[in-house]
Length: 260
Ligand SMILES: O=C(O)CCC(=O)C(=O)O
Image (cartoon, rainbow, N blue to C red; front, side):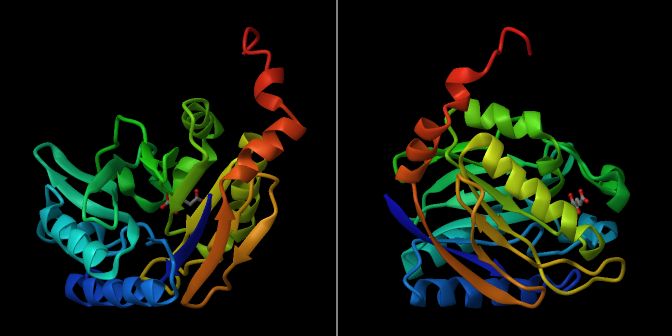
């Protein structure tokens, strides 16, 4: 099955929810006009890393984000992996990915499991405690968020549960661009699956971000890669290729899991 995917590598206005919702709606519309089946947004697309103001800006139970995303998905007939938002729950704020389908049905919420101390996340956010698996196009896929890609065992757990696409919304800083590319390509090669990674563009008061959103196939080939500036990155994936690559080098049969 072929799927045309767009990564909305947008700039994010620091703490400006209204501006970011408007911008996201424009990118979603643009992806639909390009006949994409699916659009992916970056991490914390509605607030950016304005962590100190999350008390005011985090979305209570993701209600506002969900109604916006469901409306957009139905209006433009497109599936949306809506990066992540700051979601307020009873015990604090989570960095939460939301996926909705073109019928406006919620598919998944996943909260970032590994908090990134270098960007102070642990002072402002709660860590998630469940996996990122969901069903899309009749296949199992998953979402993880940014820093999560540094934990290959977390990604492998999803792949062992059947994930054929790993979606990665991110706000990855420019100084570690080489890590971003290397880790994403490695995750695709070692798991023989697609990786669709949507980073943000631009800067905030503390960081300049790397852009370079990537769509990578199960052989580790880069299907499409953005530059640092804002861009709607488009690439087509073919889910049948996962089986093809896995039969060529059958790592999942050859694993010696009794030793590790
Ligand atoms: O791991 C990194 O170098 C960047 C991670 C990050 O920026 C994040 O998780 O928000």
